[in-house]
Image (tube, rainbow, N blue to C red; front, side, top):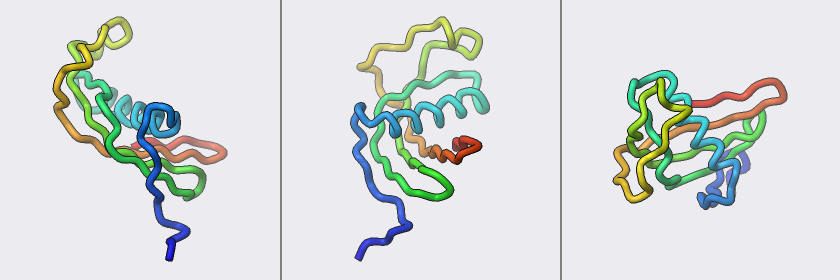
Length: 103
């Protein structure tokens, strides 16, 4: 039996723009609020979606440290793609007709 209100697993590949948006928005919030170091998205490892008050996307993703500081964020290039991930993060993105909620 399927739970109609439970989150459903969805593909984590780079062609799924909702998953990528949820991960990048969540990481941007973290970078803006919590640290002087900046981190970049390495890989989305798990994703699910659910209808709450609008579409909601839940993601788990790996991050890697960027050589950039907050003041350099807009003009800094990221480390090579072969750098080692440094953390596992969880985040979500929920949209309503009026707002967007990111965690």
